[in-house]
Structures are given as structure tokens and as C-alpha cells.
Length: 328
Image (cartoon, rainbow, N blue to C red; front, top):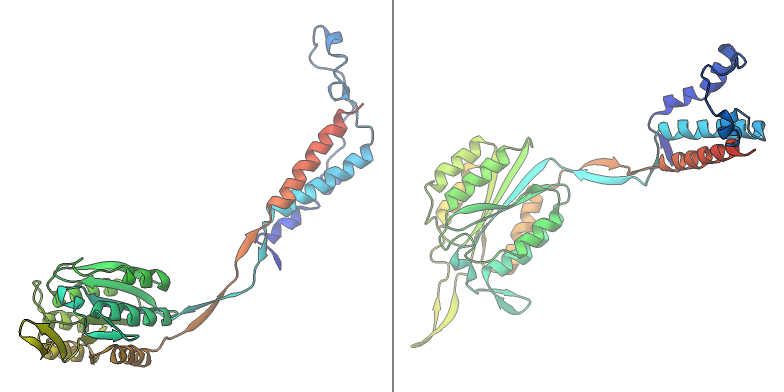
């Protein structure tokens, strides 16, 4: 449908008629106040120079009236309203912190019957989780020896998913700075005015770098109103081949489960253990249930300006009036 942004300008439509009725008529010409030498040189310049009226003054008046209507219509800013688009806004800020330390390249996960690294399994499962969070502001924090924000909090879930897929082992160092990651995540979440702030931290090790202890960072998160869900990733056992043959080892021996559990408890969250891709997917589905999308439906109607059409038509009519005025 069409809508006028400034409909009150339509009140100016009768203005030329009112001016014609209220103002006194123009007195007849008394002759030129300025004598032009060699006037005969300009005598053949057409009726526009000699003050003649157009051949069809009534038609010209109708064109002038239509021109005025088109100008007023353009000034009232007509727009075309498109179909309503639903905007789902929850007000929740959700930040994913993903470990990129060297141990995340351990291939102890099975995805579609293929042995993959912990990071590749995380990309697949967490990526699907990101796309499901319609209405949440999603951010991505990557950490190793140092944390850094890969993606600020945004409604653009597709971009967050793509940047997660582009993450690589070692981009942030080979060690694990869990406390620093929590500190940076809380700092970014605290800047937002949302009531629901959630940090999901996924790691496969213990805090081995950084100046901030994970417990201290968790207490700071609790004061800032941030809920932290921690996910410990890694299988309990796997077979490895060596010079002495095949043996079974625990690839998650370095996982500090007590510290991750304490972080979650201090902030009102929960700790989860993902030993394979199935458990990891179930964990993210459970987080979906614990932190459901709080949808506040709002509607937006795109607007396309239409003023250019009456304005263009007015320009064509103005050229037509000039042409009529110049005709003998």
C-alpha cells in the first residue's frame, strides 16, 4: 500500500487559487521603464520577448495546475509499504568461547563415520546451535594463550557460523587461558544492556596461561550477571599406535573438570561433559532448553520512496509549459 509521510502538505493544494482570488489583479503594462537601444534587433525574438501569451492559454493553465499538484504530491513524500517482515528479538546476549589450543586437534571424535578433531566436531555442532538461536545476539570468542573477539555480538548468525568454520588451531597460541577468556567475555557482555547474558565456554584442557585465575574470573562474571555454561570436550579413551604396538590412552587426562564445574556453579550455570559428537550435540540441545529463545515479535515494513515519479512528471510538464510559451 502507499502512504504519505507528510500528508499535511496536501493543505497547500488550493494555495494558487486562493492567491488568485485574494490578491489584486496585476495592473496593465505602462510601458518599459528601461529604454533598450536598437530595439529593432530584438523584435524577432519571439513572443516570449515581446510579452505575448501562449497560443492556448486555457490548456497552459491546466498544465500549470497539474504541475502544482505533482509538486505538492512529491513534497508530501509518498512511499510504498512492503509486506510486513517479522523481527524476532529476545534481548539475550549469548557469547561462545571456543578453545583453539594445540590439544583441540586431537582426533578422538567420530562424525558421520569419519574420525575428526575436537575442533571440527565443535564447528559442526556449535554451528548448528548458532543457526538455531534466532532472535539472540550471538558473539564468538576464540582463545588459546590469549583470547580475542572473533565476532562481536550480532543478530547476523550466518556470519558468526562462517567465522567459526574459519577458525584454526594455533591462531591464539598453543596454551589455554581460561581465566582470560572469561574475563574478556564478561567485559564484552557487560557493555550490553540485555537482562540475559550467557557465556558458553568450551575447552579440552586446564588453565595454563594468563594472569587471571578462572575462579576469580567466574566471581567477576557472577557480579556482572553473566551465566556461564562450561563444556569439557574429549574422549575418555582412544587407541594409539606406537613402536611397541597399539595401546589405549586417556586423551582427556589434562581436562580440569573440577575447575570447569566450579566456574559453572559460581555463576548459576552448569558443567557438561562431551566425550563424543553425540553427547556434544545433546549438550547444545540441553542448553537450548535451559536458555530458550525469548521471542518478542516485532514487525517491520520496508519503505520504498515514490516521490521521484511525481517529481519527474512535474519536470516534463514544466518543459511542456516552456515549449507552449515559446510558440507564436
